[in-house]
Image (cartoon, one colour):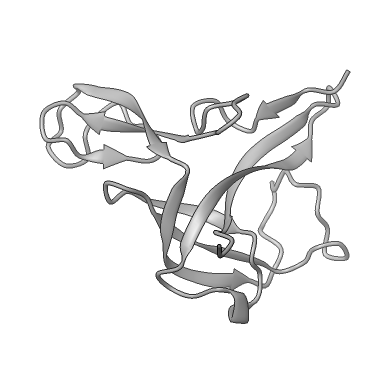
Length: 143
């Protein structure tokens, strides 16, 4: 039976009905980081804890990736199957900016300041047949 497993442990809660990105927060100066760091980038303290950063943010900046990333790139895409995709920074509550793929992938679908939501998506299938999951952000549906 195929399982869905995180591409890398410690990036997000999984499995979860409402996945959250995981980061670290310094107990000395309250600086938050993503991905989680054992040392604080701001004050150098080694007193950090793992925290949930949330599942929503605001698009801080973006671009469109129009070329296949260099190898090794685990997705299995080739020059023939590659399709451009959005990539950007999403600012989470508390100010942490997270670099991520964006599900909107054309300039007319992306706007700085737009609300974004976390999605856990398949990235590749490993040698055991398991789906390796990663995170991306998509635009929050208007109500």
